[in-house]
Image (tube, rainbow, N blue to C red):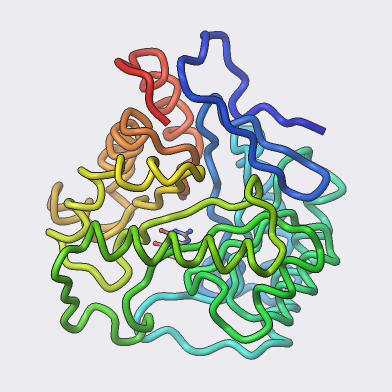
Length: 294
Ligand code: 7PJ
């Protein structure tokens, strides 16, 4: 089944890529919006696990209605200082939500995790894509994704979430992130993951200063040139906070503008909290797209 990204009346003017995600493929001639669905206790108040589950499923379905082509289900917060989550706990959070969405929505379901056991359980529950901030570096993670023929997103991070913002340093941030992503894409291929099932992400905010983030966003071409679909996640992040002077809940407009610029610079997937606003931004960006990029 080939899924369109955004229902779309305009003629796309982009290099055409398909991202194969098990039995589904995403037509990335128009960029896809990936909705962030956090299934963590702080995300949906503290009404108990069943309540959290139902609220998460409803939120996921709403994202699909708003035009998300991918729903990214995560059970562990990567915020600095967030409590670690055990394997079974993470599985208990994400698997029921993935199972419910898999039967109710024709979208690509992504699992945001680093743990091989969670990858295996999520793919068995019906997920199609593994989104890993650790780029599948945990022992067994690559094999778990490859065994189920899943698509993967490999993201760059310097250090670990708890300490990564202490003092990030690079000699050349664009070159270093590019080299890392190329090496991880190579590791995926060696593990048996098909080339057309790999996407890459420079990891905005993950072990980077404001200046590093801006440099990465201004030099996306270095990443699109690698030939893999580029995912950009900048939604409500600190870099938008610094640009606008606003707290996280008030960064919707800033994030949507950043999404439009990312599309103009060739990004294929935009990972966001605010799906409806981003779908509009992506539509306008594609309509006004000035040049052929990929
Ligand atoms: C990202 C992510 C990102 C990918 C998070 C947040 C922090 N996965 N998971 N890219 N960020 N691929 O959403 O603000 O930028 S968690």
